[in-house]
Image (cartoon, rainbow, N blue to C red; front, side, top):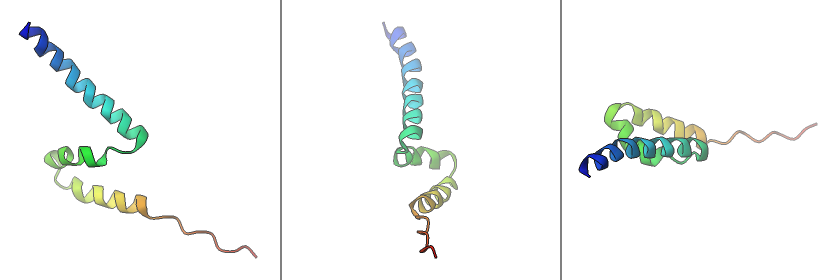
Length: 67
């Protein structure tokens, strides 16, 4: 029974991460959850993540009045 549980974990955990990644890309809400894992593997990613957030929050200037 424990062997089956170990095999199930080997498939369920990666499938869960894959599902979350697809959902985060589609919805756009995966930054706060995945940021700590990203920093573990790439400490410079935090700065990049902040820059991306700032660029996303900026709004395009509204067009001026047409003459």
